[in-house]
Image: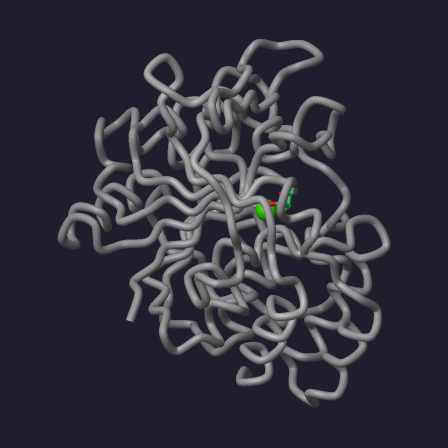
Length: 304
Ligand code: RIB
Ligand code: CA
């Protein structure tokens, strides 16, 4: 049994990551923390609550977190996931989001559990994690691993030519988290660009005959029109089957400066890694996509 926390900005691929976790008995989701990203945090928090309720996980607390990125006066959102963040798909009502700021709850949960026992998955701008580290220096190193979807290393950005959205939306936080010295596994666009959804796979969710199957089909059909990639399911899938992905140690630093390269992830690989540029992440670079898609669908098939 792996104890996990998912920090996310639902967002359709975040929703799939939550459903994958909820449908996997080897994972115990201790909490879902949400942040401004794809949509404002008021939206992402309610969406996280809706998806966990849909999956029959009402007992898992969902917390709202940062409304603004570090150092910027407004959140950088997008409309890839629709105005409501879930592709306009009705996934049911939401029970109340729990009291308590996500950054504080991350600290409290990591302190309540023995060191190196919680897997912290992050599929959004890293503002909550950076705030937690700022409030309680060293707290991120208390996690067993950070499993982060973000960055574009030897790959073009998807929100600007230089940057992937999660790192672009809060580049200061991304830089802080990667510099925190935690055991970090990174899932950049270099690998998530291969996590390609097929129309047949999306259609197959209709055959499940369940509320979660119908919601997944509707959300994915809306999402695939703009971004047919299962970015955020990747870190959760790695927790379930560590043979799905291959990667290599590298050093990643994030350009936090305002301007055209904001959020750019500069990576040192191979012989470039060394004393001057010690590795700070295991960067995943390849995935067995058919197996990934089968894993996600199999987990969702177990949900109500
Ligand atoms: O670049 C992909 C990331 O940005 C994913 O986490 C997706 O949800 C969006 O937030
Ligand atoms: Ca996300």
